[in-house]
Amino acid sequence: MKRITVFCGSSFGNKKEYETQAFQLGQILSKNNIDLVYGGAKVGLMGVVADGVLNKNGKVIGVLPDFLMKKEIAHDNLTELIIVKSMHERKTKMNELSNGIIALPGGFGTLEEFFEMLTWAQLGLHKKPIGILNSNGFYDLLLEFILKMVNEGFLKEINQQMIIVSTDAQDLINKMKNYVAPEVGKWIKKGNE
Image (tube, rainbow, N blue to C red; front, side):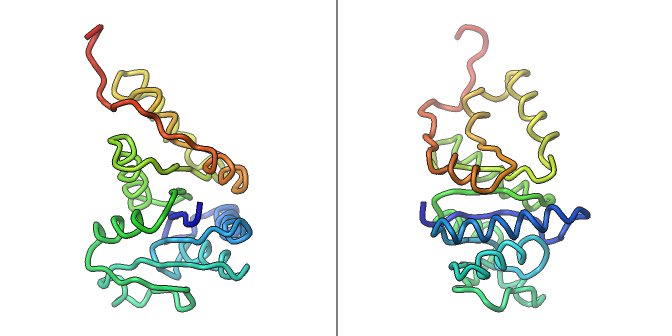
């Protein structure tokens, strides 16, 4: 695994653990010789994970839509900053550049990005590992809801298992390195069809 895309908040959240784990993830990516691909901003957890990689002399590629560049939130010290025209182009470019995806705590944008990459994997558009670094149990309720999707017949269990979860960054990366994508289609048949 050469590059991992990290989706996370442009805010810090209200628990110091989120910031601490984001920085540690950046350092661990660098120690594993994995480049970071992320949204290119210097704010919130986005800036912290980038700083963690840069602190250990790792490489960081930011992908930032031009309308956010105008708000002057671009990180100043990246290895490379790619400017794109839209949020969709940003996700597409981040997907093209990386071999895996990790979600840290964040808001609507983080969830939207995470679920789009997960949906693409479910549809077989890529076979990359998709992980959640579950800092402070942030994603516990979401993971419970995803289990409800399985129990209610809207999601196959094998697709639920595509989500790799850990509370430890190194453990998560190790699991991602060993990930094998499922070979089944996403569609669920009614009854015994």
